[in-house]
Length: 266
Image (cartoon, rainbow, N blue to C red; front, side, top):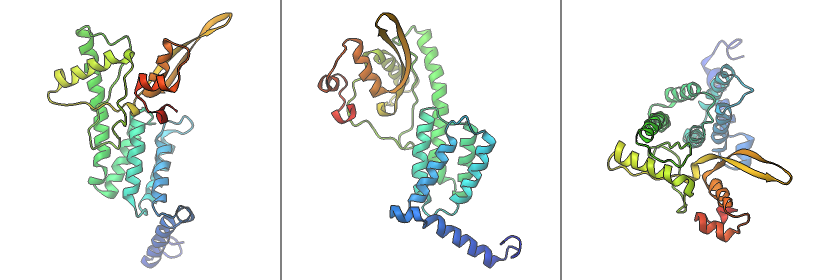
C-alpha cells in the first residue's frame, strides 16, 4: 500500500519504518523474555542455521534468505548483541568446518560492513584471515615434518592458529593432560611454530574447542570384531583412549588421567 496507493509518501514510509522497528524490538518474544536483546539473538541463530552445511537448501536460496534477514537486521536496535552471538556462531562454523560456503559467509559479512561500518566487522574479517593463514601454515608444517622425518605418532594432525582478541573463545578452565597418542604431534607443531616459523610467540591450546576422529574396534562374541569411526571432542577422545588399557574406570581414575574436573567428565 505504501508503494502503490500512497506513492511512497514520506509520512507513510516513516510510519511503516517506525511500526516495523517497534514490532521487531518489542514483540511478544521480547516481552516474554523480558529483554529487548532476544530479537538480535534469535536473528543471529537464524543466520547460523542458514550458513551451516545443509543438503536440503542450495546457495541461491540461502543468499535470498540472508538478504531477507538483512532487511530485518536494519531495524534491530541492539546490533551489538547480534554481533556478539553471530561471532560466536561463526567461530564454531569455522573451527568445525561447518560453513555451507565461504563465499556466502564473506558476502554476508560484506553486507554487514556496508550497513554498520568497518569497525563492526573487523573481528569477523580477522577470523576469516586467521583460517586462511592456518591452512597455509598446516601445509608448510606437513612439508617440514616430512622433510625432517618427524614422528607425529601416526596420526593426521591439524592445528589452527587464532589471533587472541579476535575470537570469542575462552582459555581452558583446567590443565588438561593431552593423551600420549597426540603428544608427539602437538610437541612437533609447537616447536615448528615457535622456533622454525616465528620467534618469541607463544601458543595457548584451546582443548575445549578441539576435536578429532577415532577408530574403534569392538570385539564381538563368536563373530569378527566391528570397526567404527566416531567424531568427538578432545576431552571425549582422552577419556575413550584410556580404555585401550583397561575395560573399566571410575571417575576418580579418569580425572587423574586427564586432569578434568568431575563436572566435565559427567
